[in-house]
Image 1 (cartoon, rainbow, N blue to C red):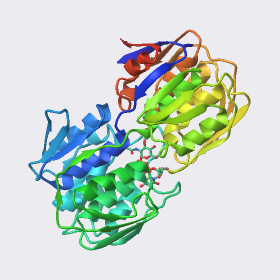
Image 2: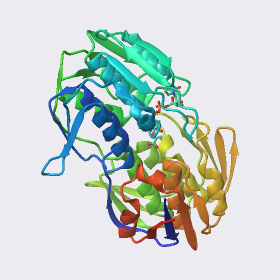
Image 3: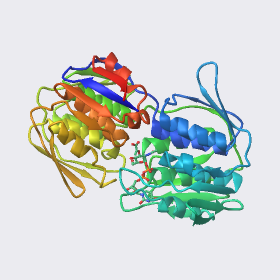
Length: 421
Ligand code: EPU
């Protein structure tokens, strides 16, 4: 297992390129299960989570290769296996989005229940509700979701849960509906850019989808979808993480590829905190101010402030002037980073689904433990700001969602190195 050793207190300066969006690439790659012929992808990040999904697709009969120009190529050559095993699905919840396409294309699917998750309870009831509305017979047996259908039939489904819609649930139903007979309406569909990107891919393959990016989506089923070339959108969470890195170190960083449109809630909050942000031709330039202001923030579904940047923002607010309240409306227990940030000198108290952040003057380096992907990113940001040495243990979490983050931060002037424990 690796750890990061960070010598903090250096302002980051320069240009950093954002990679392809992990959370767009995962359902898009799963959608290759629907295609006839080869798909070619650009801008798929080289991440642990992507590798896990590719292994599942391989087990489900995909031939995977690299084109001469570095593109990722996927072709389904063997369509008989319909099982996604516990061994792989339990590694990453997003694997569950092979269920919809498998069912639509092969008439049968056996997908392991994803199991527990450190960021809180993450049920799959809405995924199943959506697929049942299309006529799938579904039973949960021995830890597996077993489902079958003749041909799925379009229907109307409401995908709202206690915290709004579901991103991967919308993806699952949408993918299944593209090959269903007739028309499907998803009411309270997720509006995230990653869903819009998946819709873009499905439409390019020949799917008929209207309203992607809004809360009501209409999908008209087609007989077949063809393999195509596609380029994945830039990762808004990674971009947001680099913006906070520039801001918290008092640096001057241009995040190339960052989409201002996808980050409007984040930009709005960062400006309120006092960070200077400027849209450039190909990204966003951030300059960290000498003093930061406290703000209150609530995470919400898109276009609200994303839960995936909550931990990173908390680090910034931990050194702001005043008291901030961060309320988590998507995953009320996603606060594993609080105790670790307090080890670095932050003063944060959890109160139900909120964290009360009392800004302190500075942070001081210490050993800390990463618990999940975004919490790990937050600890790295804290280490960049803290005086002295911070060791972030268990960084395998960060490798799930950020490609070679230490090299990219180093290119901006950070002192960070990876060491084997
Ligand atoms: N929910 C239900 N029932 C369901 C599904 C979800 O009640 O059947 C609830 C969840 O408990 C949660 C809310 O609905 O309270 C939203 O969950 P959602 O289903 O939208 O999450 P997800 O699709 O499983 C994706 C991202 C997460 C991100 C969330 C929210 C991927 C691969 N994952 O998860 O990303 O936090 O949307 O935006 O796209 C990450 O990248 O670090 C990450 C966790």
